[in-house]
Image 1 (cartoon, rainbow, N blue to C red):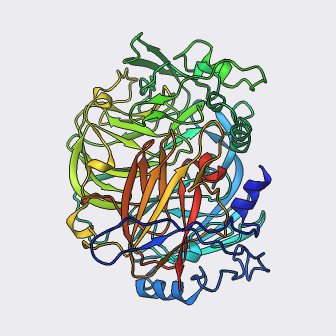
Image 2 (tube, one colour):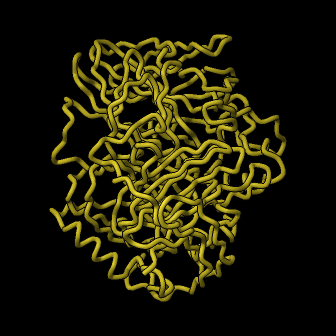
Image 3 (cartoon, helix red, strand yellow):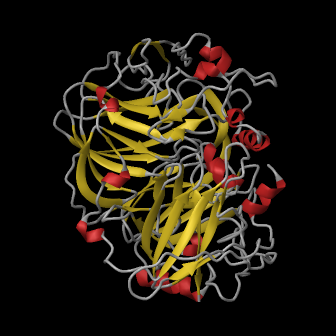
Length: 590
């Protein structure tokens, strides 16, 4: 990893690149204050009081993550019954269905074991680090106390190899969340797990619940690792074509979503199924047949020679990169073509099977834990009713398919029909796919055509409305902050307002303010933008979110109440973009 990356992510003390106060937009009533990055000194950290906890070096005008304001906000939430957990992050071997890979994971499994609590509970989790690198744990989407947010160099010192850190906070708001590291590009390994905070007054009626975690996978395949991938991308300045894997055998040639892989199952999701898939010339249909084999080896034949080339180490001789384009994402879909795409840690050669009864009402919680991939999702033979996004309820909306950027979550309800149905997942614009299976009966292998729902009505967050009880009270903003996403695939210089990340950056706000952030995408690529420790409202009564997809050369105004003091990250949730510099900090002033 490059020195600038170590500086940015692990928080070596450095000086900010100056201030850049930006002019605010006008509004009726008193003119809101403009917010821009403050230039402040980043002093070197002293010895921590415990592993992972930094000395307090926050500038005097800002609330420290360890200050009394943060403790007071936590007291207002109130302590609840303590739920104790322990996680160990370790290097391990994982079976992802198509093959075994060497990677990093929590408790030797991917996704990591689900963490499930009830709103109001106190989570007490100890993370032990057995990795060869320092790490942290970020609680994505959770409005928690600032010193538990897991950002190295900002809210805590990274946990060294062989050390542990105790996270403790009240999980006050129900919803679908997840956990992952916030150190370097570790997110693009197997280090993630779902976090479900149940509502003690749950208004939804359903019979079963299915948590679905989507991921793109390269670690341990053909010598690839996320760190090597970042170095390749960063070294590839000078042409966007160099940012895609050149192994064209991984692509079916689709430029707007590919066909569903012919995943197959013996009914129990047993490993060792052999899948055979054949795409039609139109790229619109795929079928699969499967039979159990006595070995743990699975072979996919969707493209000739794909298996052999997929595992072959890359050489310096490159062929032309496979296209990665999607009209739904406004053009370029991503920087990395992955050899595998997973649903709940399984490739389509040996998918997970979820069993239900005909007529069951099933709540599906869908989480995009990918590093560089948007996913289009549909359940064959069913319409879905969207009830939540990013943990917050919405006015129920029916759809055939969903599009999720990295970090986004959706909860949907389906009434199960009788039969066997694919939960079909497309790696949007990358010509590959993944799947799981919903089954009410039988164990025999199944042939799956591409579900028509994938090409039916598609729902994105901008079409949703927040449920009445979670809408922000109408109010003019007290402060407007403009964050322009900058950079290009050619120069690989991703940043916010032209300034690559430094831990000393601050966009000032004050507790009690209504803050409007204007996100402007000045780049030719889409970005999923994530804010820590808060939810914001999309315009015109739109949903409450913590992650929003911003298409190329578009902008969106999001409003939030500054009610959680501390220092909070804002960043693109493409892990390679954020690591390159597309992140900054929202800082509460005293």
